[in-house]
Length: 403
Image (cartoon, rainbow, N blue to C red):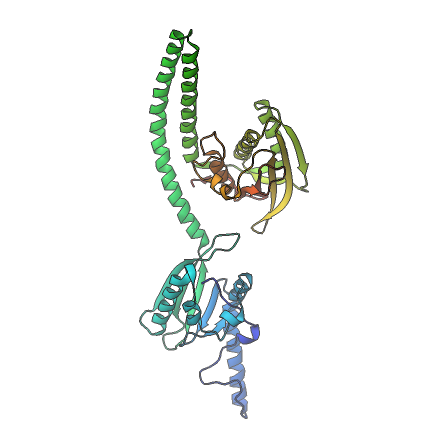
């Protein structure tokens, strides 16, 4: 399903049944006028096809491609297709039948669906399928119908439905997070009350065993475990809440430097360097939520470093999904993250160290995704880990995100 071919423009013309391009005869004025009208109609038909943004191919009764539009051409060129494999003159049923691997079942279903429309068993065939590229996820709806009930041509239209599929996925995630949020509201309230009682009892117990160092040490460990449990309650409750964004123009480099300064006041000292390669680091973002993302990334970077943390922050101009963007890269000289664990690190309850709730980077990814941005691990620059945060320069405001 991924290989849709292209063809030269001079092969797009429609051919009437029984007409041969090699036929020659002497035309009268009426015949010449009729031929001119037919050629004009052919050009108009092709222009209508080319005006469509969806990828369209017209098949004859045998399933052979007789016409395609420019959108089909462009998609084929961008995805490695060719005229020889799926262009005009190629049998599309055979193309579907040759599908292999993960596409084999889809190919067979599509072939059967097209044949049913060609044979009159069905008037319309619809089929949704994924067609992911190396840098983005995509879905399409294949719609097959007869060109006209009286003829033998069928039209296959590949309609992009990526936004709809992503919205459906976000709704599923939002529903799950909503359930988590409701559960955590009650759990956090009751759990906090229970932990506060336990902490009060620990304080009394500490008073009774103040002359027993071993008991005091155990009490200290219990209190730390209680504090971690409280943090987990708050993190899960915070993650499950909808994200309300109020975006304004912001110098992302200045925001990053400001957050680093604030972070250093509450963290152990670290050697910091800043490299600004951006000609215009202005982005339209929600500064408060992006600042919290930077704080989380800084915290992870310093925590992963040895006794002498080295942190580098680089700001670069970038392009994201065809739009101007700015990328911040935070690098450290810590232990790093294995390549096979980098993607997993952004999943819920996945930790890349021995501490933390496993929600930090997952929450960061959710915030950056809400800005239509991207956060990911890059090739390490200082021997440890490098995380890049890419944000588009423009962003609509305000917006509430539930996924």
